[in-house]
Length: 408
Image (cartoon, rainbow, N blue to C red; front, side, top):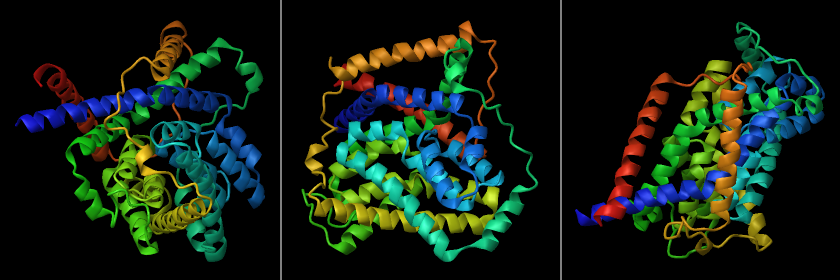
C-alpha cells in the first residue's frame, strides 16, 4: 500500500510539473492563435486562396500555419474552405498545416523534447502535405471529391465576418476584447484533452514499467538507438495505434511523446505518435459526417500513408546528418519542476497577460459581440466521457499532491 501511495504522489506531482513547465507556452500559443483568428478572417483566406492549385496549396499551408491547433476547429475550417470552392488538396493542406505547423505546438515540443523534434515537426508537416499532394495527383479521386461536395450541398452557408483592415482593427480596444473572448474559447476547446493527456503522462511515468514499452515497441529501451528498418516501421505503426486509442489531441499528447522517447522508442516512432492527431476515431467519424464514409476512409488512408513515409524520411535523413536526438537528454520524470527560474517568471508574466485579456473581454468590454468559430460536430458521448474523465483527473491530482506532501 505504501508503494502505491508513493507512486500516486509521484504521478500527481509529475503531471502538475508537466503542466507548470508548459503553462506559459500554452498561454502564448493561444493568445497568438486568438489574435490571428480575430484579425485574419476566414473570408479573407477564401478570397486569397483562389483557384490555382499550386498557389492554393502554398496559401493553404500558410493559413494553416497561422491558425488554431485545435483539431476540431481545423476540421470545420477545412470543410468550410472546401465547401466554398477550394480544391480538395488545398483543404487537406490547410488541415495538415493547422494541426502540425502551428506555433504553439512547436513551443510545447521544444520544452518537452528539444529542438530536433521541433525541426522534425515543421519539416515533417511540410512532407505530410507534399506526400498527400502527390498521392492525390496519382490517385485522382474525382468521383469521391464530387460526392463529397454533394454531401455538403444541403448544409446552410457558414456565417462569415466582414473582412476589415487588420491594421486599423489592431488599434481598437473592441478588437482586443474579441481577442480575449476568443482566447477563453480556445481554452474551452482544449482543457479536457490537456487535463486527461497530462494526467495520463504522469500515471504512465510513475506506474508503467519499462518492460511494457519494450514489449509494445520492439527492441526499445536499455539505451538502444540502433534499430533495423522493420523495427522502425513497427514503431511507426504502433505509435498511431496508441494515439488512436487515447483520443487525446496533439497538445495533450506531447508529454506522453516525451515519455515514449525517454523509454527508448525510436525518433521515427515518436514523430509518428505526434503526427497522429488526425488519424484517430473522432476525426474519422467527423469526416464521415461531412463527406461520407468512403471519403473519410480515403482521407484516413491518405494521412496514414503520408505519416509512415514522413516518419521514415525524417528518421533516416536525421540519421544521415547526425541529428538524431539522444533519448538520455529527455529526463522529465525526476526533474525539479517548481523552482525560481525562467519558467517561473514567464508563467507569472503570461498569467498576468491572460488575466488582463479575460478582464477586457468579459468585464470591461463585455458588451462587445463575438461569435464562436464553427467547430466540427463532436460526439456527445465521447465529450461526456472526456468531461467526466477530466473531473476524475482533478480529484486524482488533488489526492496525489496531498499524499506526496502530507502522508509520505
